[in-house]
Length: 466
Image 1 (tube, rainbow, N blue to C red):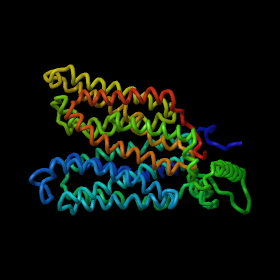
Image 2 (image 1 turned 30 degrees about the vertical axis):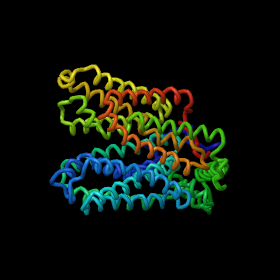
Image 3 (image 1 turned 180 degrees about the vertical axis):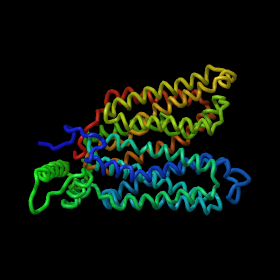
Image 4 (image 1 turned 90 degrees about the horizontal axis):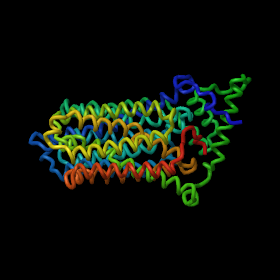
């Protein structure tokens, strides 16, 4: 018999889930901090390029491009480094190491004398971000019951989006030197907060530390460990539940060395194919670049509303969509949310392209609400599925034995596409134009909808012990 909470379906507020929720919210303090670091850039660039810049000389357009995109190269580095360290040092040690590059990033911003400080800082911020997208999804997935795993795993992008808005507001309204002094406290709080968290039971079983794994399992499931002087019926059920969990974990071969055959077999190749397609659609649909160039898109649509105000409103719509995704993912499943999100985003981007193509500048200026409504709709529908669920589905599809390394490979691929999308989107918007950019993004959504609709399995409720 398999002792699973799936049959019980307790409330998300039940005692069993208490430490799973607390641990997830705690580790995502660093995800929130990464969002602040990303959001800090856009309002700071005009100041850094002006005569009042704190640097020795104002930064040029080319330098601005590198400051913006180096975070993608840093993320790729972080994906690789932490992917290699994850099974060697453990999830907990890696989570501690993640905070260091981010702290150095804010120190470099404060002491920056020329643009090379910003280059180094943004690269280090990317290392933290890349590591966060490898380490934390695996940590959260491994400590979570299948009933709430989707909701907890979807929280990552919600924290990033809230951090983006906070970073945007801080750099818009506070002094340049004050922002680093405030934000450097966040990773310190994070390090203190995660001190009491246990290593995941899966990693401990992989290392043969069975007793520690049992304590960790009971900690995250909020169960009572059987006492040596006598067992109650509840203690006995705990023993049996952990024994079943242990057997399932070990049966997946996690203690065996990883070989090439673990990657190059038909089921695993198909999984990587689906994950790579999902990553391709996630980035080239514009789900990330779209929101980095929101102000430029509003300018192209001749909006008379302040660009900063529009950006904040679109960001708020994205946060609402992410909150809805957290509430819906374990009810309706990953597959339907992803497909609905791709279809809706494709239609929204097609509408923006047609609006720019067919409407006159006078019509657009007189109907500011229309472009804002379309942008908010795209932000909301993208946040409902394609933005947050990539971190859920990638982890859930991969086999347990190669999950850490496989996630690292997938997140490294994501970082490459992120760098590419951040580079090509401004070139497309200011080259062929906004309509062509939107039609291309909508086409990617269409391709993803068809192929993933035919091939992507539902992973809701899947046991991550296999």
